[in-house]
Image 1: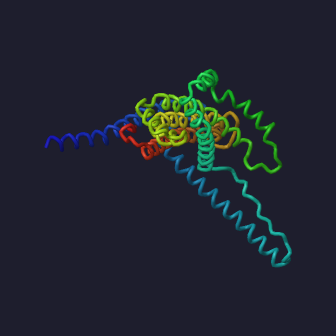
Image 2: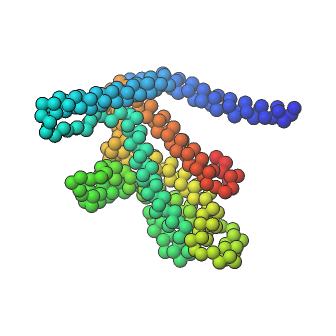
Image 3: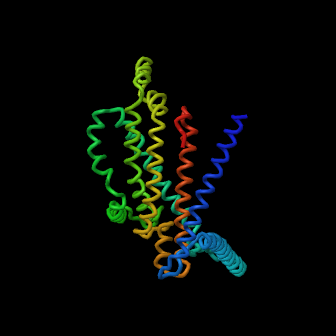
Length: 315
């Protein structure tokens, strides 16, 4: 009986406490919004944000209908001309309508994940090497310590200039704005991953290393069978930190560099200055935070899946 009571009590607390917290927050937000008047009107409350979520989704649906109608008109026009002239070279022009809010979300996600994965490819092998080799650690550590505190946004002007000078092509595979944002994200992701991976590798239980030595495992097998499984908690800690920082930096970079994405959406709405701008910005703020939360939960799920010790992955 007591066990059932404890279970029910724990379940009720797990459900009710977050609901109470959210309700309290919404109440405070509503009171604050009703008492703040800005040059663009009243500060948006929960109801205004809910309305904008519906509006932004409807704008996306309308935009897709326009895009579909645009391509259908071209196909009909080409079909009519081909009837008159079978040798007519049919052309389909790309739709150049304004990106919707959902399009901006996808653009930001593609950019941040590209930069993050590029950083993973660089940082994890480097972190393992640094953790295994004390001489390499001594050689690289000063460089890491110097560049680690530098805000990635400070790199943005340099990255922009270098990409403009180096990435020259008449038919580029990627937009320069995408390359600029991706490299900026990579720069902010590398250092936490290198440091955490190196710490994880260097703190592996000595008994496990002795087992590898006794079995005379080749280097690659030693890394695959001993180093990587033992270092996964530290590696994923670095990856989760990096992804959270990357998401924040990307939004700021898009605002500064006017690259497509959620950051540019927020800045454009601020510059627009319409009566709905504040509520649209507030909606974007919540979406940015919610996506950041989902990205962290996704990393946690991946860590649970690949970790051999599930008890080390709690939250």
